[in-house]
Image 1 (cartoon, helix red, strand yellow):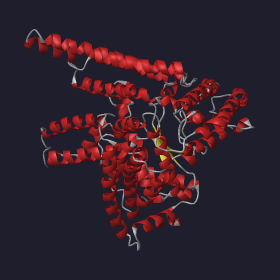
Image 2 (cartoon, rainbow, N blue to C red):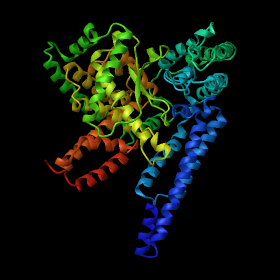
Image 3 (cartoon, rainbow, N blue to C red):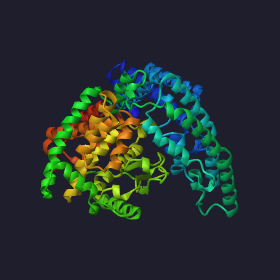
Image 4 (cartoon, rainbow, N blue to C red):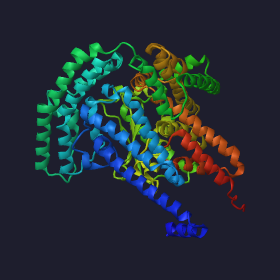
Length: 593
């Protein structure tokens, strides 16, 4: 009905208007077709991504990492970009232009980064075939068919290993080698997959507990098949990987840590910085911004130190916070219970800063033991796009003596609510959006929102303890330090030890976390830059809205609208929020009573 009325109105204005309206309709249909086809291609090309989104059609397989498949995907990205440009942006509605721009940005980035041959570095201590068992945390195990799909997936490990070996050998020949300090971590992860007793394999965990719907006979058959696969295919595949890794790959890995040491490395790092921050900022500009933020936050830390009457300088206060037993739980069980209780404390305060609460629930889970030593303090796992799986806040219980109580509030606000769970769940729930927009994840937007959400704890009245406030500052400092050490290591010649020392001198995080963080930045160049850059932009927009709207400014409406935008590049977010401010400025204030 709405479309018909628009066309009738256009007819009344003259003969040319209906043609323009029809062009917009045709372009919209062409865009929708392209988006739908590319979404389906993304699911079939990356079965793991399909599983993350709750699509079970490809739960029996892994991504094809053969050279031929990698080449096909690269050509398909180029073809999709050509199809998009053939449709064109002119004549689209504002909503379609937003979708067009977001889709184009993603494809342009994918195509431009092909020259850096990222596929030739297939392993890090955070991702790779040696961690494939973690997919069991994502897929459903509700019936025999689900288990059979998992068995089929397990049966593909040997092919994945063979493909990875080809990429590793090709990378070594071309000079694409990872830092040895990271590969030393990977060595232990591969070793953890090599077991004499198949019942102790990480892949067997899914077969240790079954739903009531599966009969005893089926359970026994599934367990038997799993043990055969582990013994006859999975363990031999990992033994082959281990032999090549230990004898050839690890010794040949590089002593340097900077991505700039690779072919075209300086250009690659600049491209990664632009990709993750979605800005034209150079590494040098980002480094300078980081130094400025570190100085600002240190001054706020000094203020908190004075409030708690600590006698000593800031480094001494950091040592106190890292070492005093009163700031730590004694057991993993106590730590986990505290995380659960904290989440329930946050939930009822959300209405102070939002009008709209996501429908999708979230839960708290421990990070699996086999990856916890090499993983950061916590992370969020999104719910399924179809609502069939809740979101989960994963917390690290390894060495509770290294997990201070004072960081838990800021961490939970960032990773769970109103941070990543709100951002991702609201995205899934956005109406009339193509699937790539509902599930998009631009790091500067997503992680910028997570860091911004930490500060919302003040608006929610949750930082009533000065140590919790110091924890928030520590987390803010952590992201500011990232700007300095990431650019320092990858663009300015800093050593790993220099980066660790700088981090330790400016943040109260424990040694375990600091080392894990620095190694993460080495393994994932540029990604860590996005958090602070995104937070600063969202905070800037909030201040702009408050100044522009004056008494019409509503914090809950502002926060809702940032999430209503969906995950987009920061320039796109700014244009959208400027248009929202203009609309808000024109609305009437509610009548006073």
